[in-house]
Amino acid sequence: MIGAMAAPALAGRMKLRTLLAGGLVVAAAGMVVLTQVSGPADLYVAVTGAAVIGLGLGPMISLGTGLIVGAAPPERAGAASAMASTGTELGSALGVAVIGSIGFAVYRANLADRLPEGLPTSVVETAKDTLAAAVNVARELPAADGAGLLAAARESFVHGLQATAIIGAVLAALLALVSATLLRSARMPGSPPPAQAGDAAKSLKKVDN
Picture 1: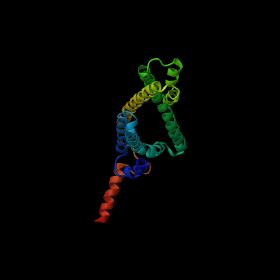
Picture 2: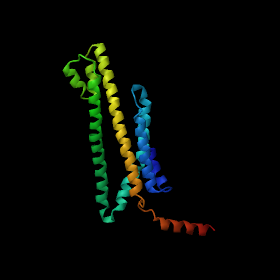
Picture 3: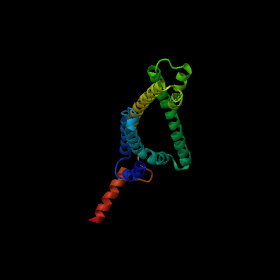
Picture 4: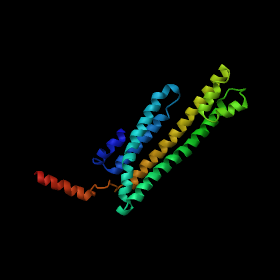
């Protein structure tokens, strides 16, 4: 909320590419914070990282659609808006599917190496499905085996979280570089070109004098 609400005001004080690229850098920093999560005791680290990510993505969410629509001819504004919405939904779905699958693969691989010996095959396969499944099946085991399974599942899940956070940080940093490179002349709809803005400022200064 803070990032999205502050973005329009900041857009009038700095170049648009600086604002969007800077926001992505902040989001990447938040993902780096998530890589420091190591267990249940680090809940505050996870919350802090998620908050920083939200702060960094705020400008992109707030200004992105306006930037896309403003780049299209007036008669194509509706199509551009629809394209922006479709891109947002598609990107979110692909991010969850692809990066989530990588995190799940890391979870399964780590869990296989950490499970206590002697567990039934059905228990092992169920625990590999999700962390929630591992928690549920651990309740049905003897105390020692259940505790060992739960510890292994939690540690494996954290490794998966760290892997996805690293991937997200790299992607956000790359997008920041792309934004800074490709949006050199980008500006929000309705804002004057740099030359006109400079002329307007000079006119105001003459009036004040």
